[in-house]
Image 1 (tube, one colour):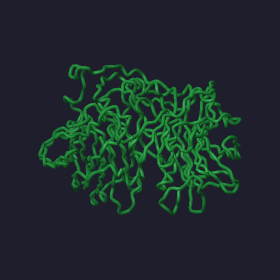
Image 2 (cartoon, rainbow, N blue to C red; image 1 turned 30 degrees about the vertical axis):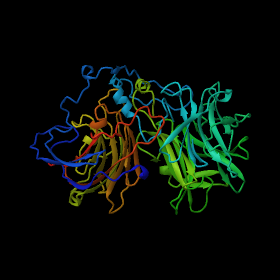
Image 3 (cartoon, rainbow, N blue to C red; image 1 turned 90 degrees about the vertical axis):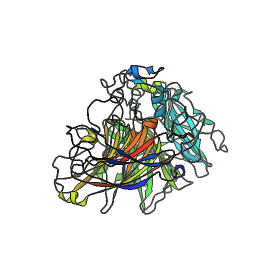
Image 4 (cartoon, helix red, strand yellow; image 1 turned 180 degrees about the horizontal axis):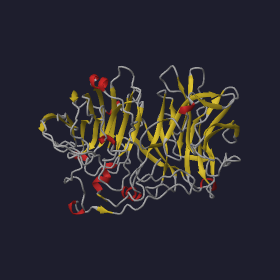
Length: 617
């Protein structure tokens, strides 16, 4: 992202005292107190003009009704599109894949009036999206990054899956190419699904992908470039002997999908791939070996399985170094190497991973810590992030992970937008008053980010505190990204990193929840977060990425020049010192863009106002 950043708009250290009387974000009884003036630094995101403001906010974030609390049709501009969201509809179950509907549950999807301005603003700038409609095997070849993605050319919802294709030099600026593969044979008649590319020793490229047959049986197929000398890989040829793999005995016909990139082992001179599946409620992965990618053999039964995790899809398997910082080619193994096994769980639509040891001779993998096994332990991301795939970037010696940020609004809204799936880089550090930490009493009620009571409005002695992103000036819409420190019964501190979507939108047809988990904090280390805001996508990273949360939010008021950023401290006993840097990021060039980014302008008016507020109550 460094290439997209200008100089920081503002960097300052701010002391935020505790707020024992007035909840800043609502969710509790409100007591009137005489407010003292607050100092606010306003930073123009476009012009980088700093100014001092003096204002006296009252009733911040409470439940009292204001003019901003509701949207009514008579006040909307002419030409507003009005439509009914309708109930959530399961998409993908018939075909034997995970549910592709992530919108509000039935009963919570009341119709909402969306305008074209709201919908067009939601489209991301530096996150990849297709020209339109629904999206979901990346690779690097002859100087170009390639993204082959599941794409529905007919609609913004899942179905009629073909392979879209885009290329980039830097993973930010993308050019769209013709569709790479379509369902035109009996073995992929119901869709060209997830696949993975493998670069052979001689530089040739092969692609394995899952196809759904006429009868919806999931089979694995081989494809390769029609012209290996073409760096853009525009044309692909399907192997005449497809399918090359069918579900083995005991595996369900609709439970056999998403082959990994292949790796090579010197001992037997063979290539190997993994494919996920399930046996009853046990999620499993199997290893198959091959000499030529045209015929495969199942090796020693199951490579690994975890009871109670259900179907494993989009399995990923790759080595990481225990001594170096560079990424490793998929075929690396040795004494200074661990292997990551990652699975996307069909049952809860989250990506889990575990570190372990791969035994090449036995073709088995075992976790270093069984309590943190794949599917029950660590997650890549604690937000709206799913079905990720990685590839080794041989140009920069790194492993790049690519995930799908799914929609959480209604199917009807997706169709209205015609596509599915603010450009700021914010870095903040926080220090909590040591005296408050020492005096804090143990809390015998365990805290979680999803604790009942209102997300960031659930207050404690040592939190929450952090930033409100995409907030409008009356706080009717806001997405808090925050830390919460809890002292356990044995006196141990646990730090939580959370993203609260509960007040992110006034829209009624959007799923709103609170996401997050604990984050490890080393002794003497400041609390830190980095937030990337790309219109409706907010990516949050705590402590350098030890805990990550991807958010998809759909504000109706906090868009364009009405979107603001605030510091807040809802701790009742602790003062917090904050240091914040904000960069305005250039929009990524994307031929798919259906509109000119609202925040790129040459006019004198600032397109968005960022406000850092110190509350003295």
